[in-house]
Length: 281
Ligand code: CA
Image (cartoon, rainbow, N blue to C red):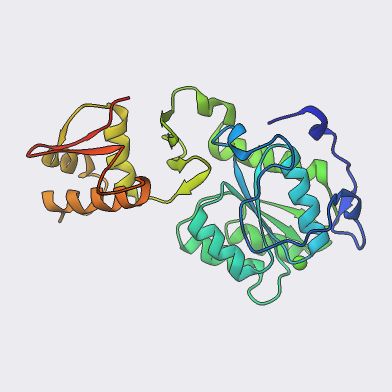
């Protein structure tokens, strides 16, 4: 990830009473959950479009802010949720690449967030933050599908290296994302490996079927696919009870999500009487 001045991480313990405060450069409160841009480096668009998004679910402001700042220094997009409910909502709707999840949260605790997240089908790596020496928390967390855990108080360097290892394990070397497994058309970015779609820095959540249609079309711009062809390509992917008309429905939903104006598509074109084609450059 980006280095430079941002690579100089203070390795103060985070999560210990009073610790982490030296990492906070501003006194802004954590607002409602939103993806925050990097602290430095100008507009978000100057960053690689695929910089990983990390969700922090932690109610303790100093801890959350310390982690957020450190991650932003490394070039990650960061969102902070102050409750389990907020975190689960963001995680299921925005599909972050990784979740740092505190166990001790008011209301819905971290375990319940993790349980529901996995039940929703999310495979995003989850790093659980547990209380000191709480072996039970570690075991429960791992059983519920956490990928790693860290015991408070922890050092930011340790956290950062765990996060990078998890991202590598889950997605491979992120720098490979520019090496051909990503289709770009204008500000539409289709990451084939991670099965992720973005417009600019806005993540677009597609169903598996929508993604497959987009993947096939965008892989060969200008090539016209008939509905029956698309249906055939999707055959392994979805229920068998689909007919050609359902392709229209999926394409319609896909357009609603990726096009500025679904009635005047810029990406997925209708070839009247034949089928669909992805726009040529
Ligand atoms: Ca907490």
